[in-house]
Length: 238
Ligand SMILES: Nc1ncnc2c1ncn2[C@@H]1O[C@H](COP(=O)(O)OP(=O)(O)OP(=O)(O)O)[C@@H](O)[C@H]1O
Image (cartoon, rainbow, N blue to C red; front, side):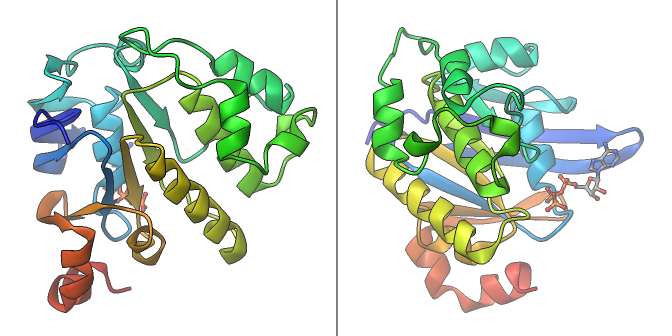
C-alpha cells in the first residue's frame, strides 16, 4: 500500500442556499482500498460525493487527487484528472448498445493508464458480455448499474466513486452487484462507495467512514466497524 492517499478530502463545508449541509468533512482513500461512506438517509453522502466531483459548491475545504488539488476545478476537468463518478441516476447512453456505451467510455487515465479494455470488462463483469448488442435503455436496473460501473472503469480512473449502487434494486441483484464489486476490489481498483445499505458494504469494503448530519463521526477498517455494535446502533440502524 502506498503512503500517499489517492484521494484526500479535508474540511469540506457545503451549503445549499443558506443551509449548511456538510460540516468540515474529511476522508481519505488509499491505493487498492474500497472505502464505504455510510450514513442514514439525508446524512450527506451524496452531497459529499458531489462536492468531491465539483458538482456541489464547497465553501471551504480541499480535495486532492494523488497530491494534486482538484477542488475549484470544473467537474469535467476533475473527471479528466482521474475521478470516475457513477451517480445515483447512472447516466448511461440509453439509445446505444452496451458495447457502444463501453466504447464511448474508453479513454486513457490521467497518467496514460489503459488497463481497462472491453475484454477485461467482460472478464470482470461476465454478465455483461452476452448483453453486448442490447440497447442499454432496455436493460434492467441492475444491468444498467453494472454497465454504468463498467463504462466508468473504461476511462481508467484513479478513483471510482459510486453513489448508492444498491439503490432501487431487488435483493438478488444487489447481491450480484456486491459480488462484482468484491471482484473489482480483487483487481486492485481504488473505490469510494456511498451507501445507506451497510450490509451491502460489510462484505466488500476494506474500510468504512460514517457520516451523520453532515459530519464524519467514525472511520475504521471494515472489521472494526463490524465489531463496533455501538457505532452501528447509533448511526446506521434503521
Ligand atoms: N439540491 C439541494 N438543495 C437543498 N438541500 C439539499 C439538496 N440536495 C440535498 N439536500 C439536503 O442535504 C441533506 C443531505 O442530502 P444528501 O443527498 O447528501 O444525503 P444522503 O446521505 O446522500 O441521503 P440519501 O440516501 O437520501 O441520498 C439532506 O437534508 C437533503 O435534504
